[in-house]
Image (cartoon, rainbow, N blue to C red):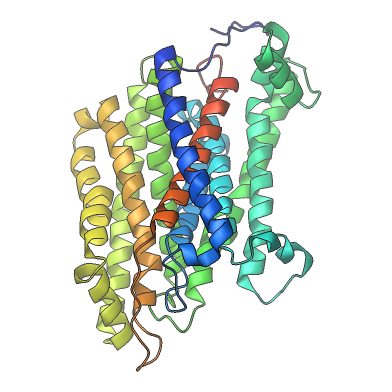
Amino acid sequence: MASNNSSVEFDPGFVDNRLRVAWYAFLGLLLLGGAAAMWLRISQGMRSTNLTSTTPWGAWVAFYIYFVGLSAGAFLVSTLANVFGVEGMHRIDRDALFAAIISMVVAMLFVWTDLGRMDRMYHPFIWRQVTSALSWEVHAYVAYIGVLVTELYFAMRYDLARVAESETGIRARLSGLLTLGRRATTEASRAVDQTWLKRTGILGIPLAIFLVHGGTGVLFAVSKARPYWNSGLFPIIFVVSAVLSGTALVMLLYVLRTRLFDDEPVDRNLLDRLAVLLAVFIVTDVALTSIEALVAISSMHPHELETWSIIMFGEMSWSFWWFMVGFGWLFPLVVLSKREWRRTPWLMAVTGLSVVIGIIAVRFNIVIPPQIQPVMEGLPHGSYFPSVVEWMTSIGMIAVGLLLYTIGAELLPLTPLDRGDH
């Protein structure tokens, strides 16, 4: 436990070493399977997938927009503490920022894997196209990651300096390196960190909303050939579902880290606050999706009607009803409706996981069904379900994110060492 001076006791990581071994062994198996599938992707190209000229976007694109949204949502949750100063939220702001960074890393892995020529990933930075929304997005992602890293630095710098001064071994050396030479542990240095933390957070809010995830929605909304995507409400829905999934992820991580790493009781008031936010975002997401569906169906446009028919009653209906509606909306709303349940840690962890899974279905329902419907009458209908290679590479890339997060959680002070607000 931290004292009032720079001396600290810092021992993060799994409380149970057997759990640590089992977790890393599990991740190792996922990574081996993902590596084998990635080799097939690289050696065989797109032949290893079920992507076609009719449905050129599949699971990798769905997971890409999912993790971008997860990142933007987690970041916006962190601003409740760093920018708006909501009481009690500082216990989760570092976790939220670190999860946002890892989510962007995983999202970029999915983009890279989806490229037909993976070796040309650097081309957008050399040959810029000012009229291309995708070109702008690539640069926005880089700026956004820079903001996230900067904000996490200012959030942790004070505790990193304390760890570097008080501890020994790899954690102390790493902490000293990450301070970038700023080893002061005075209140004045801490105040400087907080000032720049807030400034960086303010800068990141419009970047995350309008350029990162709102901009990702624009990539779909400007596609005139797909009326389902070509909607002004689409970028807004992207942002709302991003905040929804980000809040669910942060709540899940908070419960797991507190129980498995910190070995401390969960702050039930904080848990209740996160749960109420989650319920508000679910209701908002349901409302906007319903409005979007109502407008589309009322238009009586054949493409819109058939797309929604595929989503609700066709080959993607299992994703819509079981995962999007069931896991993403109905089950969480039932659990979140009772205050006693909202203050039950294990139940909120399950609820957060349910929403995180449900939003994956939302992304699949955005990407796949509009491509099944042909853009012109007379063209063949598409048909798509991810191949084994697509599933295994996806699992492998998600495992990379889990591994990076776990290593960071074992080495970094993602929970404030004084266990309170900064």
